[in-house]
Image 1 (cartoon, rainbow, N blue to C red):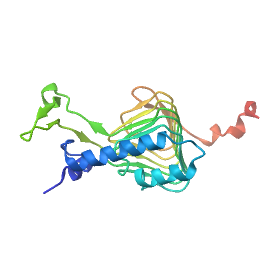
Image 2 (tube, rainbow, N blue to C red):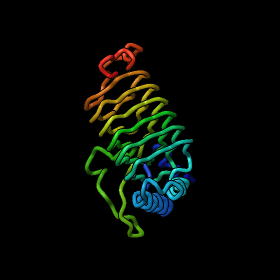
Image 3 (tube, rainbow, N blue to C red):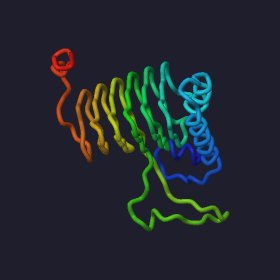
Image 4 (cartoon, one colour):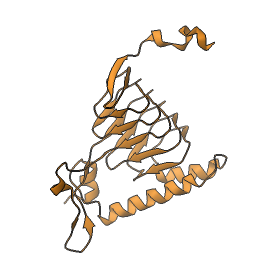
Length: 206
């Protein structure tokens, strides 16, 4: 018989009041707060917290803080990751972030989904008295060498291809092909990123 955690990670309807999930969330929320209460120069303390909160992370993974993770253990982060202030990750399904990925301030990765019908979305009481609801989630994949600018929201069931730039304030509801500059709400591809966008060709920067 499938556990509620297994159902959740498979994108099926699951019960968020399950004791195992409650424990995992409580742990992640506590570790997020502990991290947020540290100073940047407390590198060893921060590393120890991340070893528990984000065990599946690569080399040189820097999170500015404050950070907010729902589970943490269901998020995988590659090498040389940088996130600015207020990263929020609702990893009710697997979230995979590649190598050399940059996040601006206030980026949110939101895997959860709720039923569209109000009658199906409403909370209800289980026979044991616990209050719960019907939830499910879909995975998020962000490939290598992506930059998500300030205030970007990425929804579940989205893959952002390698080398993409997502403009500030975008809400990404559909997958984005590799090497695209995409922006807007909903986010859409503006153009392909080519070598002509090299900063070496922008003389006003030097």
